[in-house]
Image (cartoon, rainbow, N blue to C red; front, side):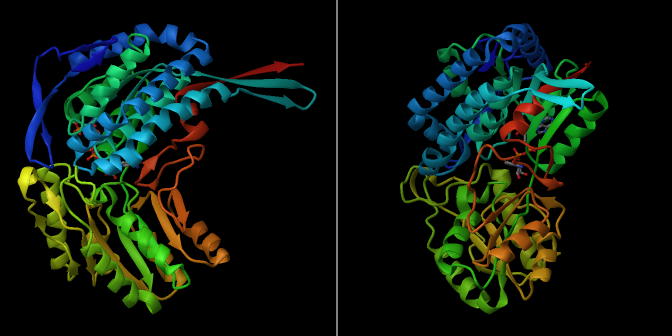
Length: 476
Ligand code: NDP
């Protein structure tokens, strides 16, 4: 059901799509196949709600959003199970990461908005300038399937906290947590029309959001090709745009690293969520003096990762999100072979017994023997597939790391402080982790360089994005 004007309603055309459980390879629910008419209804509801919501005292807005966060915490188990059933990830991971981070997003922006201040500037003895930030209006938030509730809340929380009203579309591949979230919004007493969640496919419901003349800003997370299409539509309409796009992130391991820590975390940064995290380090560069030892250990530990039923506590790698995506990932393994790569472990579909016998499982895969410019090392695979390459010098590895069109994140492993700063300064990535991965401080700006995105989310940047700045200059 869509969530429009505070109610759960069917799409106008009564058209639905099957929602597939990827671990079982079969449908388990229906999802609205909404169209421009549903987006129109949602936009009208958001417009009606705007004056009340944007004028509400920020403390009151904040309290409602914090109530939603409390309800997410209360329903952790149910939401984690839904996220896993939609997406294929281990329930354990959804419980430990996705859902707690979703409630953290709500809480962070709910409280952040209270402290969001306007600025004043004394201009010599001549003038005072003050700048106000007012909510921009009705905004569109479009999110992908890989971290469904986490990325959905990452977009809508700052929009709502800033005082905007929202028309949001989650990926049609993973709609269930957004549907459960709409029930929590009703329970928390979120005023009607403040948030509208319209389910459906990108080219129809998503495109209708981007094209709607009364939706004045678009916050999008997804693939680079879709981002380009959205920008093509939105730019001539002069909409505000925030695009969080794909990545092909380098993971650089210097010989002076803490070997065990680098190895352990690199396994996580390669295969967490089946490699379906935009921040996964899919290209591992290892200094030649430790290359053989690193590859041997990495391959041996990767081969022991349990691929299996996402409900099973022992499972480290669940199902890929869809059959089509599984075939895409496997086609990249084939491409890597054609390009001269050597598959040291993995590379095949896995058949699981029991309820998951028709699921979309792929072995974690490690490939060596490829150059940094081949397609396998240039294009985003977005699955449990990594390549490992040796390097000799710092300059060489910086060149390798920066050689793709992407620039989302990078990881550096070294115990040499000067080197860490030196290399970080030269990497063209929006976020660089040194001796860690996926560590987040929500106050920091987040986003990609080059084709990984435009704009920054997180902290004040996100709240600012959803506001319009106005400056008043008073001559004194
Ligand atoms: P897509 O770009 O295919 O889809 C993202 C969202 O956009 C979905 O809700 C999709 O709907 C919708 N959409 C598709 N076409 C249009 C359109 N023409 N107009 C408006 N909306 C549209 O990405 P995926 O869902 O496949 O997600 C994976 C990608 O997301 C990867 O490239 C990954 O790197 C990136 N990503 C980036 C992150 C970042 O922070 N930079 C974080 C997480 C993922 P539907 O699914 O219904 O087609």
